[in-house]
Length: 292
Image 1: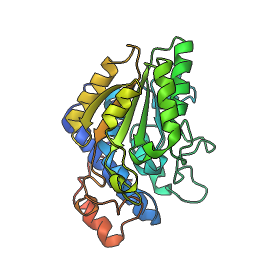
Image 2: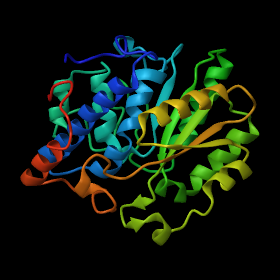
Image 3: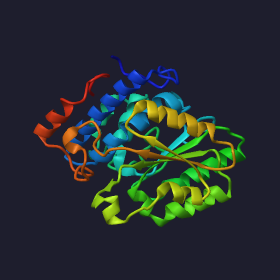
């Protein structure tokens, strides 16, 4: 199957086809991380379905005419920037830059740094996101700018649940509700794991839905590794925009989804597979668009 761009894949894309794209994205993730023996495969694998659904079915964007300001398009900000392997794969597969460039992941003088940056001018990347907790603030600024410019498009963000331990997130959450930033859809990758262990053991988050509701957000919950559920949740979230509240999707995922030995543990948050482990992982993931 030839590589597809967002111009070829739109909101009518079937769930089956989105699942096929997500399988290739997962192959890209483990190959990128293996290639340099560095990176974060666990969360990347868990978010492959969400980002595939967003970029190939939901987001109104034009990869071939990339502009930093994104006027007249939806915007996405990756706040948990350590899951860059999935972000780079989806950007490449949807046409922002050549798929072959994925082979330069984390290599010297390449644009695909371990955490996304802007100074290299990589199309699709609108903020540097190595430090956790900052993406929501940036997205709120972008959403307010769209309101000021009478641009009715939507701003999307993705965050890790461990990232919610950062205080800046909650300052931004209060501000977004107070200022009625209702053209914003944020999603939390709620896999319950972070680099040092289970979130509940490191710093429990309590009832996240109750927290976000108390902070003035419109909140819905979804399974994050079921493509139909992801598409449904994003559609429902979009339907709730423009009603005076920012929207939050609490998305339940499994770290390492798709590779059995990477699941059910935090251990694969930030380590790379060896040769045998790579082969075992690839054996579980269908090659659907062609490896780079």
